[in-house]
Image 1 (cartoon, rainbow, N blue to C red):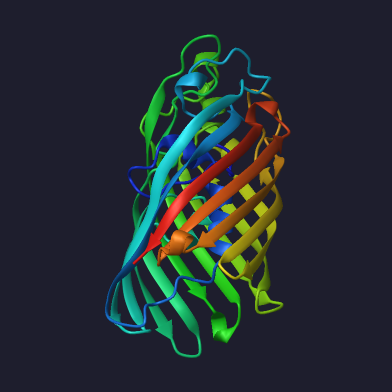
Image 2 (spheres, rainbow, N blue to C red):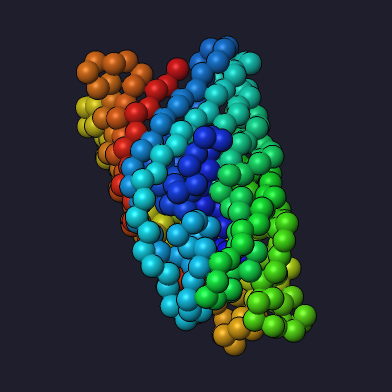
Length: 347
């Protein structure tokens, strides 16, 4: 499978341009942990939010499906850098049935964005007295990870892309027992239309089976929000992912501690998230005779200004992202930088 980190990278509204999906994971982390769990509206009816985003992204990745990366010339180096404009729309709509107790939702919840996931989610939230806010949903389609290279190890000629069918389930509990503690679990199944990893290199059937990327992914998140003052909070957390890929060289786990700081003053809201993690795999990659273990790190900063020009329910947002993955096999290294601005509206 593409690296554990790429796995779920980004996707919300169907109009999202693919370029942003490779960096929405850290951006989503900021959006989700920088705010409390999605509340249930105080009265029956519709509510929601929408936010168009535009920006620029610079990245290097041998696994990213784009016109600039159709051909690579080496299995032992990182691809050339791409810089491109990006844009898209994130959004969600809720319908509250019983005030402050039950709501139905559709769209891309902020909790899903922490997962780097941009896809359509349909679900229900129910506030259980003395327990917390329970969320249960299905993810029938994802935009991120919708394509991969059929054989990413083709060198010196054009690589062909193939479609990926990826869907999942979501369970979460936030504000547990009235505290800042939240837990989240997602289950994904990934199927690739035309899996040919290693075919161009003439690997044996047994070696090619080690490179298979289809499989199941389990993702667990644990966060605890601590309000140090009325305007300043810290949210330490940790995430664990287990990737049960059909190929043992792509089967493994990731563990990533993270910390988000948030400061609010007047109409300004400032957030910053930092994370550092590592992943480990079950078998050696047969092309390199090494494990594709690695580490990843990143910083995400965001600024929100509410009610610009006196516009009620509107906000202006700006985000900066830097992330890097350093693998023992250089082919799997990744570097990403992003700057984006958006105009959000709540209704």
